[in-house]
Image (cartoon, rainbow, N blue to C red; front, top):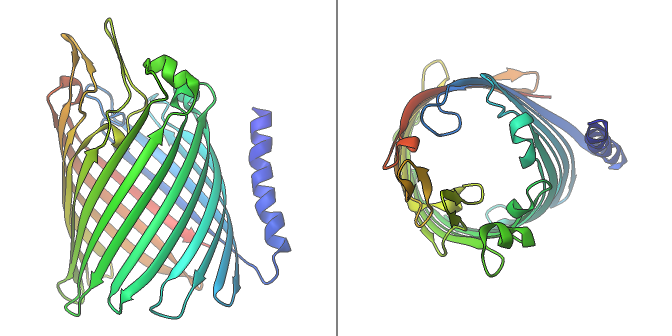
Length: 364
């Protein structure tokens, strides 16, 4: 444990030391304190609700040279959950970013790298991991009101105690966005991702002839409309297509797979929301989300053996947000609440419950 905290301390010292070396560098920070409550924090029926608290500290050393902007950042994120859920975690990340902006209306390019490590409490300690992330982004205007953006990302994640979960993930997102004089914005995004479990333990655990992988293609249509100077509407609909089955193992009364994420299911998701600036300068937003998720050939444990899974997820939410001046900077307070109903063909994943969260973000 001492060795781990020494590594964490070195990350902080590195940011501060390099920040001092930078000439004409601005050192800025943001601290966010959040808390809330949720039913079904693990996403299964029959579990107890839990309250939680979360804290995030970010320090950035920023430097500007004509069109080039550089940023060296450190982030500490911690969360604690009640009711003996052991879902709390601690994350440290150190990253560097470069961005070059052209003349107004011409776009920009950027590169970034990040190293991060996350540790969990007790029960979930085997899922402690380290990861490296890199990205490149290019934005340009194909016409005065048409924005094109391409983002390529690459993630390397390593689970020390569960090497079969370790993976590489390249991903490409391409977006085209059109702005209209009627305060209408329409966007279309295509995303392709590939997740490859690179450790030989993955082949042994999932019993595949070669290293297992999962890949997916997604297309999203975005729409927003300004209804007045204080009211706006936003909506999107997305379709996901699985290009190959999610890795899994089937044995005598044993049904197993890697950690489930969005690669594990395909289907349709949609959201619609209305945002309004009240006379008290509080942004009020209410909306509704609907998702249809099909987990394909994955089998889940039931009393009758393994069964496939299809979920219908419905979320209704309401949020209030207010900014206020703190010196020369703007702090932000936000509170949100909602209700989720998940209807599934499997009893274990059929659930409903509420959640509430609040946060205060303070810049310095």
